[in-house]
Length: 209
Image (cartoon, rainbow, N blue to C red):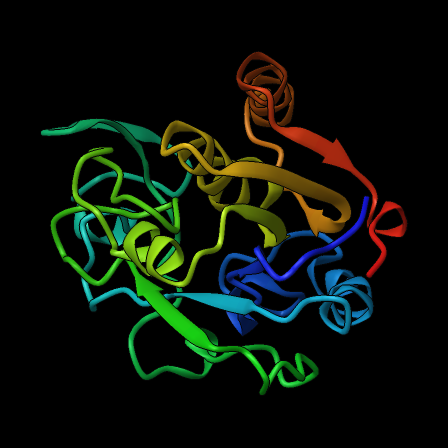
């Protein structure tokens, strides 16, 4: 799979709170860093996303009396999983993992900063209509295909890939450069959506410059 100047590597949410020891740690989350570094040298264009929540964000279980993390509630935009407080703006947990060395990235896109709505995808808030602006950025740069890596495979990476396809971009998810949360069949459901929408699922070793 040859990389061209029209391709972008999207590195999703490799932040302290999603790595071991973090508030919403993904098992083995920091293991994505080495394959991401190996991939990054092959791309001219790299975009990082950063979860960036307000204190008392509406997606936090602590913001809802009597609710616990990983329960679901009905929000104005649909069902929302409630999470432990994580990636609060300006906190250590919201910082990129210190081993992530992608200073060459052209854009850092912060998401989830609207208190009233969560944001899994790099392209849209969870209402699936409020845009982050990433699509316009990619189009103005002439970038037509995205490769996705990071955390978590079955949430923010997966939803970003689905929205990329919905917007007309080719999308490839690099399985070994992601790690999953695994919540109530979320991995299997996401992979079924990948197959349905034409998202390519492959290993980072299949990518070459």
